[in-house]
Length: 439
Image (cartoon, rainbow, N blue to C red; front, side, top):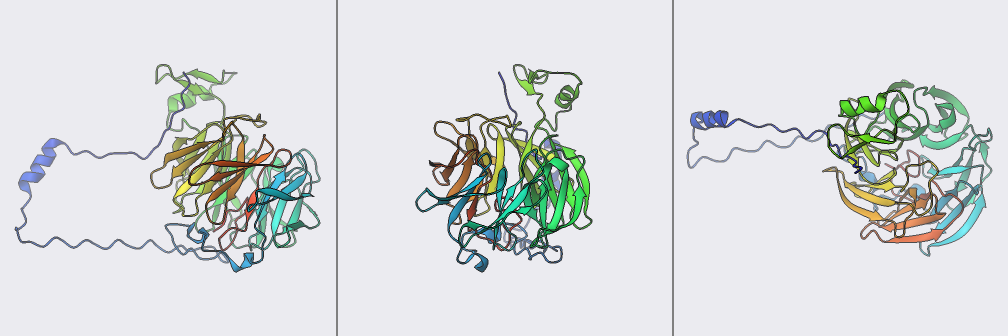
């Protein structure tokens, strides 16, 4: 039978031999019966984070999501309509949902192939990234969140996705087809400089180090992750990711030249199989303390665990078919892993879509919520109060609203092939991009 392996590293144990324990017990000097218990040393406070110039400070070094709880609504979002903005990739439109009624209240035209709706760094504008796949007329469409209406589109090369430099100075346009990051003026969108990423085929999604100095970008088409120094403006390293990261025997089988079947017998476990298909990393998200990054992989059906400092893979956690989007809960304790339900780029309706809930502290999956009747949950975000997870149904032309207490699902019909929707407004001080990576 086919079997995916949940390989979680870091579970080392230290055991003392019985002889050593006996010697220690015999030689230890007993304490007087009336001796006071030794005072416990106070737990040292975590070191303050030195951020890059212009980036807001990190109030809690143990939780970089501390300012995204429901009580932390920024004054910059005052007057914004409560809406869900859904880019319909094949319809070249954005559907606007009123979350109070679960109804589409507006639909407007944007550029060609809208991929993601991205909140601006200062939280005052939304941008629709229209990458015009296979064409040269990509664009960014601004949307005023106070009116819910779009402005004139701005021509931009291949904006598959967009992020912001942590100091708010630059828009980072992810030019996927060109293997590069284009840094543009955050207000005018004029190109300022470019960082080439030649070893990152299909550069895609990103998250940022706790101090704002680095960003990690996924490489969808060659199963890799790349680390970028935003201060020195260069790529530092690119690593391959694999669910068999600590299995040299399995990696050797996968690396053998020539055509191979999708599954081959696992030499280490009778009856099990190894998947030879290269991974397709998607979304990436930092742990609350910023020391670990989690990378969803739609081919491996789970999330890779990467140590930020050493930039090495240290684990893999199986979740569900087509792991794709990653969203931290409002309290920063859980990570919602969105499983798109398919291992193919062009999936089919009514797939094995689900949401897995991972506990950050233990790195274990605590709940799994399937889409009733099947579906294709993709990208989205969480409501300001944390009660709902909103996701596009990529190949079912719907939007799903998951109840984060029960996993119950509501569905709203939208346009053709909805992709990276955003919920607005969201709590936080500033946006790092995508569909609302706020801090």
